[in-house]
Length: 318
Image (cartoon, rainbow, N blue to C red):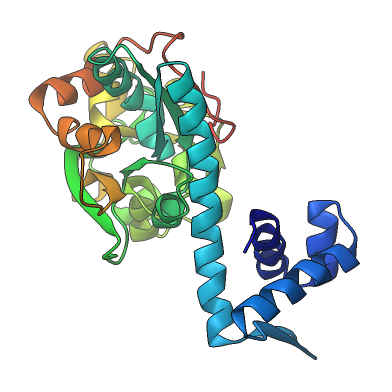
């Protein structure tokens, strides 16, 4: 099997047709069919067949689909590691939920990277629902954010930090100083950051628990931007308690009381459950739950630009 053959097969699996796979790879359909035919002969398996409803994969074809993704991911990371090693440096690729990436990752990355002069860090913002897949595909080395819905034996999940999400608004908001009911909260205009669109995490859970309809949700490019709009009296916002505490003390924001206006959850660090020499990812997973790291996440001053390599997946924030 060659990487070219595996990329052609992965594209067919992903697109659901040879024609679309060829268009995505920018090659001819005959070239994709040639690679698939070579795989079929070498493996002695039909891999898939065409039906009226699309492609139907054999058990062997499904197994190859997962292996191909894994092998291609290993190839990509090997290229990166060899290049970095040639320059005497290591690259650690961190995937994070948008809430963690915006508020906690800079302080953690700065403190952790300062302990190793040869380490560069790439941060990408990802939907927590894709954490396990990204780790298995080797597109990231560690993920930090909400834990997966179901445990996976291929992944090690370690608790990192408890956090609390509170509902806040400007001091002139009609509900300021009250303990609003779920219905009153549900009827407000919600000013939200990118994490509200994720499938897991405290903010999506809070919105689902209250039953906030989509037409009451306004999502901004960052959580900080949503908070600024709340200060101006445009609605209510869900925020990390430690990030808005200074604004509440100054009277620029008020937080609502009551069990319906707050939610506590835990960020977790996810790494592949591999044995052998500890990796930088495993070391970061352990380090992230230490008191020093937690303080850095809550009070971080930002990352040195020379040590930080934002990935193309990063969501820009102000």
